[in-house]
Image (tube, helix red, strand yellow):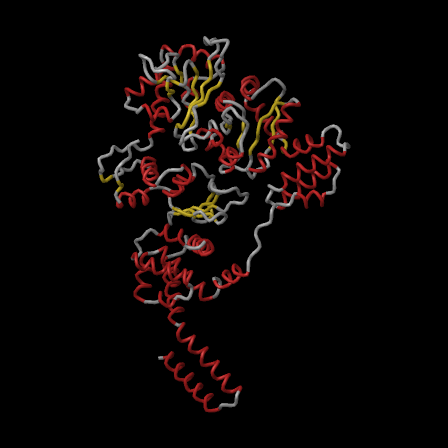
Amino acid sequence: MAVGGRIRDDAIRAIRERASLVEVASDVVALRRRGSSFVGLCPFHAEKTPSFNVSEDRGFFHCFGCGEHGDVFSFVMKVESLPFPDAVRRVAERFGLPVPEESDGARPRGEPLVAANTAAAAFFQAELAGSAGARARAYLGERGVDDETARRFGVGYAPGAGDALARHLRARGIPVEDAIVAGLLLRRDRPGPGSPVYDRFRDRLIFPIADPSGRVVAFGGRLLPGAAVNPENPPPKYLNSAESPVFRKGHMLYGLAQARDAIRKRERAIVVEGYMDVVALAQAGVAEAVAPLGTALTVDQLRVLRRFTDRVIACFDGDPAGRRAAARSFPVFVEAGLWGQGAFLPAGDDPDTYVRAHGAPAFDAVVAAAVPLVDAYVTELAGSRADAVARRADAAREVARVLKKVRNPFEHDVLAHLAAERLGVREELLGREGRPDDAPAATPESRARDGAMRTPADATEASLVALMAADPDAVAEVRRAGVVAAFQHPEWRRAAEALVAAGGAGDRTALVQSLPRELRDRLVARLLSDDGAERADRERALVDCIAAIQRRPAGDAKRRIREAIRAAEACGDEAAATAARREWLELTEKART
């Protein structure tokens, strides 16, 4: 695949300055304002308490839980697994900014797989609106889906002709290889006189699958009723795109791009089974629903949802099979850092049929009656013969296995207590067997290192580096004062030297990232706490820090003289004591002038 030329440095700086990191991060993290910065659950590791911070003014994100740190480009690189140039182009496209490139003879292609999917989505929607889409439109009408809802979700139709999409993409200039990698086209087993490729989706109702930011990355296709099929080898009722560099089935949720804002607003996400459930609920006004892609809900999908809310409600059938399914889902929720709730529909109904028959208020009542999944889990484990010794032992071992994944101590105790009560085992035994693996104990080396990094001198140097990282004018002032060489902590000195060498114009995000984890967290904490500080306050702090470092030689000399006086007096050497006192007076007089 062709790639673009080198992006100019001035263009990268301009895009970084004009892009909103908060807006980009909000695509995947539910952020809440805290002072002048924003906080949310980290998208890079599982956590229950928000430790992910975004500073719009400083232009960086930082997680105090896992240590991830960076700017808008590194955030996109990590979330979307993109190389740096593609992340820059992605951010620029998001904010409508130009990307001047130094030509190397190659044609800039951006994100070819997304481009192929976008072209295919437009084709499918046009086919649904045309004469070929009459049967698909009739089916949508039978299912109660109106035109506005179909457009909102980008619903389309794949015609039955074997290579209709292939011909369309070729006419649009989409390379065949890109369409094959994107899972839109397949190669024929045997070469023949016709096209060497054919469409994956044929005579199907098409549901575009988008990532949280709204990019089309894949498709799901439903076979239309009455379609001509080979009874000896019938095709699957539902068919998804093959996995690709932009689509991992177990990480994606249908409808999340449309539901994202509603999930934040209502502070809950409702997980249903299929595409039509999501569409029907959204049309009825229940906009916070999403669905897995034809498989059981995965840990990774729940982790994606956890970025937006910690209240996830899964819908199940109200029959015994549905309650067993709810019980089986609880360990998956726990591994994703969620407890989860189960909403149980009347037997024979799914969210689509229920909301169409009874309306959104009735469906909301079902959701309001949702119960914690832990109840279904423990009840299922106990079974109808909870007095059977072997069953209780097996159930206790299973609970202990799940308990090991519960990091929150209060939640750990709640589950242990509830399970012990239902299973008739000792709570302390269950809690002990299910204790999460302890974090590695602090070593003498780490304790010494941490102690060395928290001296008063270190605090002054940390404050000065934070001021330099926040303000190029502070860098110039520190250079004029010439105090960097007097830094006592080697890492803070290296950071200050790098800032001085760059003249305040270097990549501060890279500099912060280069610091050891402990120092990086402390520096970011200072920068975040300083976000709302007045310039006069920062200038006063800068003067104080510089003065404190400049006073160090005199302070060291005074300590040396005091020790000399004590030593001379201890051994009765009056001449040495007198000389040391004279030196003390001279130093004191010099300090006054």
